[in-house]
Length: 105
Image 1 (cartoon, helix red, strand yellow):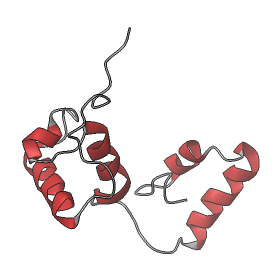
Image 2 (tube, one colour; image 1 turned 60 degrees about the horizontal axis):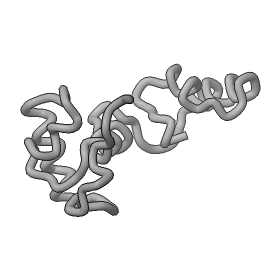
Image 3 (tube, rainbow, N blue to C red; image 1 turned 90 degrees about the horizontal axis):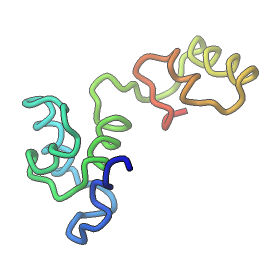
């Protein structure tokens, strides 16, 4: 039951760090076509990656609205106070911080 893995049996799929050229292809493709189907996106972008790899790269590193750098004092409060109550539930805490992913906390 469920869906088959996107690339579990594909030995030709590239693994490891993305190159700047791959990142640019991914950004260009998403800007042009959107990201409706993550499984179809790598082929559309001319990448030899699986859809999951592209989705994670976009979501955690390449999205233009991701904020980088030091947290403001307000952002630190938004992180520290819920952490005291929720513990390490980063995916819930990060919902209160627009532009921040749970990979960045």
